[in-house]
Image (cartoon, rainbow, N blue to C red; front, side, top):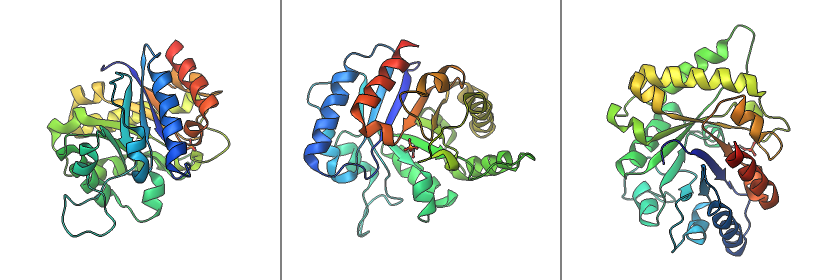
Length: 253
Ligand code: PGA
């Protein structure tokens, strides 16, 4: 449903084995079944995606993946294509996470990933965010360029299948999240640049999530004061007691 809040759990490599992935996914489904105003996307590592598949449809539970290849198919050793993910029941794919950008992803390659994800009919969760901030506001220029280059070759009519995840790189894996007042400013900025690229209507409709050190204690303020449409959660998404608390707190808003 378009106006539901969206909570994305990015498990990264924080799950050791298939059994653990199955237990986590089962618990996520149980929580999702009780949510009224919130939807979950669960993003396991590739080998464990099938551990998160569900035979009984729960409207608030969606399968996601952490990345997809820049290629459509063919001889690309080690790559996983968006169409393959779609075949497993994946609906959302993260693109441009800062950990992948650090490992060599550029705005240009992120753009190619997004194109493949969208061509496969999936939704792209596109991560953007500055590495550092300064009084002069150079982080705003950085973000603007990053967003514009990242969407350089994406057709305008695909905007509705894009979810933005604003993640200041310095907050990812950190102790503290960005303060909610700043989250508000930055999410507005992301919407503004998105509408520069895709048009004002798309800018109004796009969901902007916040990510970076989100947990059960700060989620509510980030959502209400930061006025974001959802959260991209790393560490807390594999800590089931904390993740359940976070989901309940967000669903109550
Ligand atoms: P974190 O990760 O919640 O562990 O800070 C967030 C992310 O990388 O998306």
